[in-house]
Image (cartoon, rainbow, N blue to C red; front, side, top):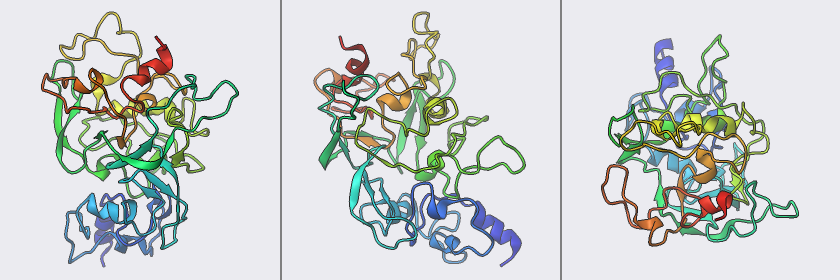
Length: 335
């Protein structure tokens, strides 16, 4: 194999190894695999590939061979919203140990109907974390659609419509080779948080947002009102950067509070709630919404909202919110 072919294979973007178990941002996804790594063959075939970038299968199906319902050992099941107890390079999946913090694309375990007693920072009066996880999975009522056309609401410049039509894939957000790295600079960490790309595909962004990786990986949660790892808070961590990252696609959803009363000048997204706080319990994209899918249920008013472009919304669509109806509002405002 020529050196140029090695570079082509090494450049292909993929989230999960088809025949090799994987952690969500660890294990075979580490960027420094070395020259004689065995990892390439998990996803690529140079002459008999079935998908672009010489991949053995189209995504998301290839990703789901490790990270799906019947995955071969990955600790994260993004379809059912479950986390497991195995560690790479185990070839078998251990028992389920918790609920994925981002929910799942088909099911989730968010106990969205029972936030009673929580304060804005996710603890009860005695300082104990309250359980907010279901004992069995529930079908999602909203999700980031994967592999089909959808609208990236709020994308683009002011007054450019409701948002662009895009088709998300796993690799739209994640870099399977361990996170972006610009050699010789400190602009991006070699290993970014959850192997998120500093610039998501189809976002149109140019600067990028690299979120500092966590030294300890925590994929599951017992409390869905606590969206952050204890080690990733602050201006350089997850909560301090995630709203900036989300806003690369949902450009006109980002708000620091200055335009809540004066308006943005946009015909659709004229006034917006603040969304860039960097502390647990304060308004932030990921404080109110999960990343993959939510099983929260919506009532008459919450479940019958129109889309930003004026078209009828999907009945009961939970908009990736963590709590039923508009309980996310009550968690802070308690009216």
